[in-house]
Length: 448
Image 1 (spheres, rainbow, N blue to C red):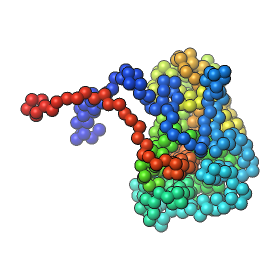
Image 2 (image 1 turned 45 degrees about the vertical axis):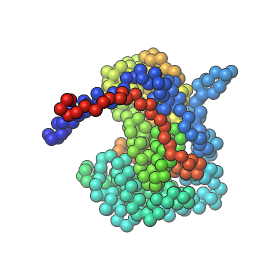
Image 3 (image 1 turned 90 degrees about the horizontal axis):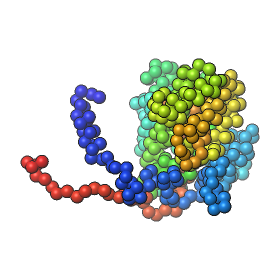
Image 4 (image 1 turned 180 degrees about the horizontal axis):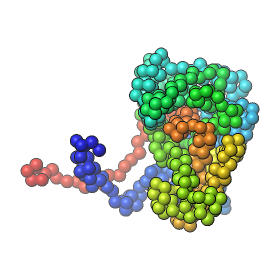
């Protein structure tokens, strides 16, 4: 805190006193905090035909936890991955599906790939004048600034017709890898004193391939690396309308705002550690476990340390085993299940089988440790963040890029929801807040 900002402590105390609400009031007025009931179920605020999450089934009239499923436009995401795996990269195919509602034919996919490739360009001197001008270690902030600045280059920025919004969304989907990677390289050069690399994307490469090529000094990557990153992008592409950043997309869209403002708001929502930044916490936690447990094969030692983390005695002392549990899923997160097979394959290729064994052990032990400590209303299982950070570390992707990669994938889902909101909704989203304020009489200055 700067010397002339000492007043902030006193003012913060005033805020805490004025704004503190008694927890009992939420029960008294039946307010569902975080738009979720006491069982963690989200309040229904809209309809969507883009995706669906399944974590419970009705069995004999009883709501029963089941293995998690994620559907994109009616297709099971696991089946989608199986469909394109080993044949071609899936990002572009699944992006087409989410945006337009149907799987593309070979000709349609080629055309769409060509369209994305043609949009992989930034305005003249944009990289120099915008991205390199104010480099930041927070690449999400750099990305958000770049998106908002792109608005000034768009003569039809405020046109919210479906045709224009689609043009803008396709453009942003195409350049997000460039904005994120160039933002990282600028930070790495100016703040870490490393060499500068600005590789132009190739029209012949997929999104995943371009991402790795632009990020690496030598432009080199293996087919396995690109395949695993491509699958990671597909699995992060969409996750229902209720997740924080997608709901933000729909809220800001409903106000009539332009596409750049909407996506900037979504980015700001995603960057939080409770949302898109969660996989960073997993990696940090795993490094802490590896440093403090001498024998990674000793289950008892690992269990004891997990209990210390849960009891706020170790790691960041927040009492959380990161990567475990999900707001929606109970028995399993289908994205984590898909990921795990490819993680094992990549770990073998990278010589990190020992790390993978530790991850697998913690995936098995953590739910037991959590269940012993607290009564939980639904199952606890590994979520997609548990393995994604490990994948990115094996791909030698810097920590600063983890959440931006999430954004590179999720902008497809945001775009689909923005368009669906524009087509179907004609009212601004405005939930109600119950005021518990007490009325007071004005008191003259000399009597206070």
